[in-house]
Image 1 (cartoon, helix red, strand yellow):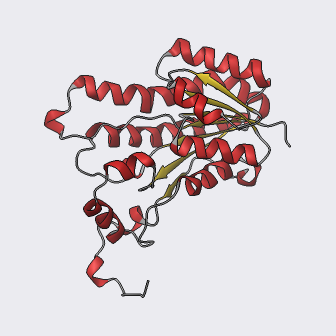
Image 2: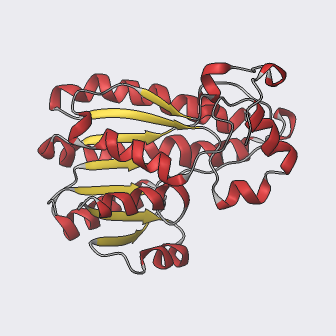
Image 3: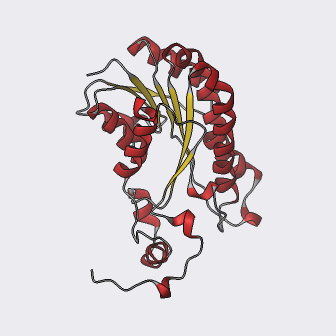
Length: 254
């Protein structure tokens, strides 16, 4: 066991839950944050040394309460994982300002608000921040005008935070997940979409939630003590190869 504490937003499912579970396995205590109370309570079942806190990261008052409850429960914050996010895909012409703001409020405003509220406590522990961006913030794609823009902004925000908070010993990095086999992705991705992703990725597969969690927890740990201001694409090589030419791939037996 360690006395270290991680605060993970969007922890009720997917990458956030996998990250919370890995922190717990590593002996950390975890404040699990989500606005979906029933799903959060379900995720908490069977997890020791974790505390569920229902809050919406896009609402300043709720963020302040979230930090206060985390400090009340654990007395410190060593790592803030800004994972909470929403996805809204659609053509530019059909993206209303209301849809745009819904994405920005959680994906960008939430990262800003949570970080601002946690800074005084991270100063005390010389802690770390990991902001979850997306491969869509590194490379453009169709139907992602709001989502991709919000995630690109998260990457830039991470650099700004790293530049200013480094003097306090606070490290800030971003993780940009590529295609990940979450329940939501598998529910909405057709076989044609899955095949297309595979064809454009050197590793020829989707990543797992656990694989993302491994990188997130590493960046939050002392093992990454000299790493700050970086955006790590955890994407099977998707961003690095661009469009790619699947027809030229060497055929290998399964």
